[in-house]
Length: 440
Image (cartoon, one colour):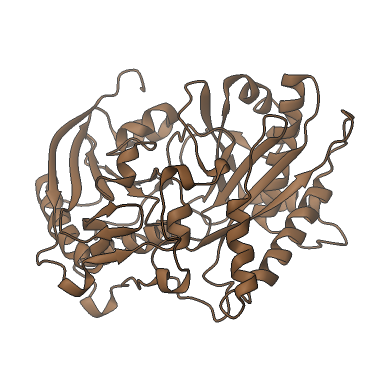
């Protein structure tokens, strides 16, 4: 199916809020975390089956009208970043793309070719336009059966996964005629006042570990863990120090262990290894921030496996889980005082400034989008039957998403071809995960 399927762009248009942004909101200041975010378009794909008798033309017209209305609430997304410090909210608009797909949705989901998913997105993930061009692009891809895919490309310089989730559900609620205006979830802006920006920002100021370039030798794979296998894995990695590991802790430990083993087989020797995990700070700071707080409100903590004098170290899953738990608890102790302590805030900033990568060290970066309500997005024709990302082309990046049932997890992992071949044949991994199964 992947060889025969074609996705053809049939229309592009710029969507603007119906009224200009008020003068006092024209210059939207980026926060420290916005400045530290890498210049990419964060991707997300929602696939919807055909459950409506409404024509495709009517659906697209309804989507464009509601998108313009939604941009009134998310006014920075219709602007452009200037100088790396502010968004000029000048109503330049967001881009809306319409495409048609030469197959049915069910045929595609039977064999969801990861390498094709990029074509459902309106922008290249690693495009530098994310720092100077449109901050939001949306692509509606219409399947022959009447199903559709909504592809989102949102600049990471102004939004994290939580903000993207808030935007999608706000747009869905605005589109859905059964929901009143008073029920629509609106964003709260102002993170720059909470997390003051640096005076100047540019791509060169980003910490080395946050700057990436596209590499054609990388490949992305999708690994699916069902709920029963995750429960078994959680039981296996439980220990007196972490008697109840989370789903993400258990899967992260297995991914990291198998990645270290694959890297060791490839190079012939074991290297020190660092596993960095992003943390949504909204509920971890005191006082907590609302979930609809818009922008990048994400920190990270790192765990490390040391290797000395070229000797190999046995990798134990329970030890890795303990490292994760210790890391998040230590990080939580800092974030709890971030608003009341200059020292704590400086410590957070120093973590970014001191990030370094080395060829002598394996570096893995993991972000979990689990529990974000992407599967709750109902535009009026039902909820999505699959939520996914696409090939990110950033080596050793790991993204986790819930399965539709809320119990399983999909892991999207990018590695170079040679390491991936070793990783995906690991028997311990395959005891818990399936490689790119059909979407059910």
